[in-house]
Image (cartoon, rainbow, N blue to C red; front, top):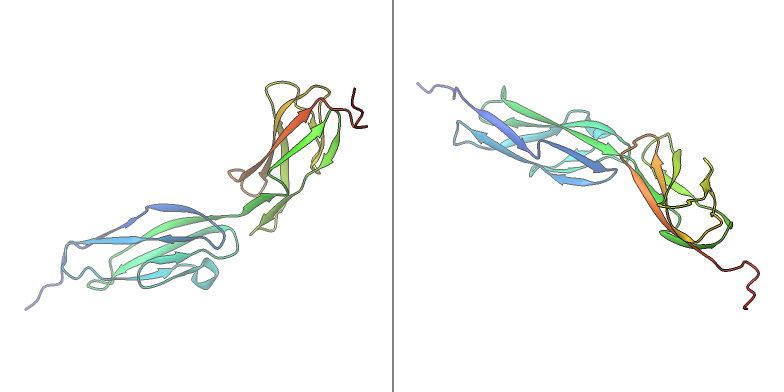
Length: 178
């Protein structure tokens, strides 16, 4: 008589992932305790949680959230392993860099995709005078030249940030040449 395998274990790699919306990740399942190492893959949340094919290639959905991928042993369907996939919103800013004159004001925009909360928190990072930014992204340069980094942080997922490099130059707005 044949005995069912006793010690089948499954481990998945990577053990967890952080992906952008619509991002992809190849998962691999390591099956030990049997020569029949085939697994079947599924997304626990179904189609809402993205999709995975027979080779373990996962595609994230267009909505941020935490989803779960499971690999089940074909040899013993009572044995499976599950990993969590954190799908994060994506954040982009209107420009990567800008040059402003002293005390010049400019509005910058950030776009968040994949979540209902599309708000960002703006902040200024600078070694010296950094100027000011409003919650709406309206930036006012300081009255001294310098290099400033404007940071937009996704409120729905604070790990998601985008930066704008700002150079404040000591030119006059009127364009007079002395």
